[in-house]
Length: 113
Length: 116
Image (cartoon, rainbow over all chains, first blue to last red; front, side):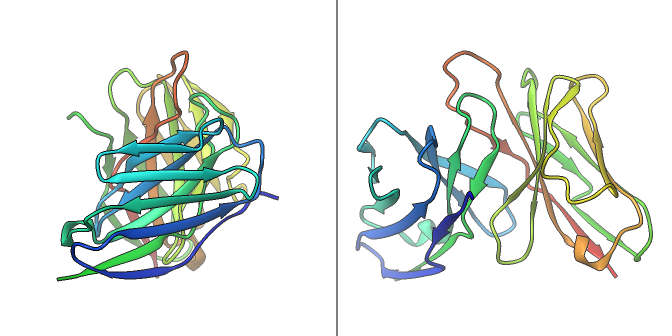
């Protein structure tokens, strides 16, 4: 079956790096995503990675994909208090614009000043 | 507006009542999705439209839930005989239908439904 798992909480100090981990079960996933949800707001796409890539870097964000272990991680460098939010990992089983995304339960990131 | 718009933002109803939730996608986006997010959970897929037709409704939990998109733009999610377990935030998202699309979804802020 399809399942995406994440740890529920992460607490870091401002300026440190944050690493949020995710495991997924379906090896046929074509794209994997990280979405951010701030209180009272909709989900916002942070970054994504195609399944034939190992790493993707976008400013302070680094995504690592280990397809063999079905493990995805999001590293946020120089974490700021504004990064405090819930981060969702999601997989797209079908590719393209057919967005039947399977989401994890989310990791709540708390950044202490 | 530029983003996905959902109304109402909050809806409180009594058990057994009928509810409609509306979604206005980003102009030009042909694909539209409904998700449900319960407290402490990630979004759960309900239904996906490509144009006017429901391409995949496998996530609808039972026949009390129905969604339409008659003109290929605005969509309405309809819930009959609401139950307390239907309480959740209902999220709408849209995306472009184009070759090479990464499948990025643009989400609205959601409609919070509370069934008393």
